[in-house]
Length: 305
Image (cartoon, rainbow, N blue to C red):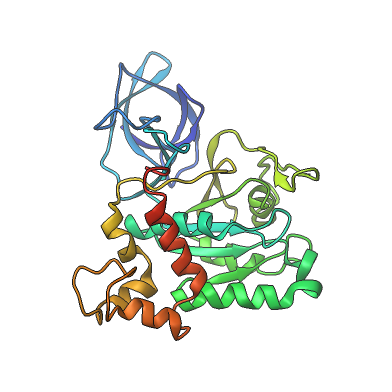
């Protein structure tokens, strides 16, 4: 029998035979492990698994091949990696310009990972009602950076309802991952999409203006209007996995488009003469913020791998 993992609680899991939503508990048989010993979790939410019933208990006997997944290096200098979710149709990267302040390199690492595994990504700008009047120029500038790169940006507010209907409609019939830093409002957004759901909602640490971890487990929820959402714990660090330094530029869509005109192949887009990427940055075609994130990934190779 086959089912989808809808909750990961460490050594125990909840499964459901999607699209039917009838959740039941399961455990692993023996020591199922992924290839290589650097993955901290053998099974992720969204995984398709084969299971058997042993008495009244379900036992997972096999993990089916993944269509895609989102993976991150768990901490700086760590050799271990963690799979956030598997078999995802759309990734919604939730960010807030303020409360907590956005970190563009963090966002860009998630986007690179989505590009690497072929997962469409949409950027959700949350809490816009809190700062729109004072920071409209900042909002416009942020939108320009990422829309120029090719990513949809949806402005949202759980208090005014802005953008909620658009996301709810886009989620129908899909498995949707909601991810981002702690405190950006992922769980509140999910609650707004379907008020019958009850993901944990936390507050901001005023002293540090950083989010407090409220979601400790990865979990999938069914949406009343169709589709599923995966709520992930707030992330404070996101290191790249399975990508060589020489390949990173391929996963910046705007850089990939410009790179076809570079004089040299391969080109690192750092020092070579006739580099079309650097020319595009100088011309404003590629946002300098995105280019600086790229340079940071090159420089922090040892730190984030």
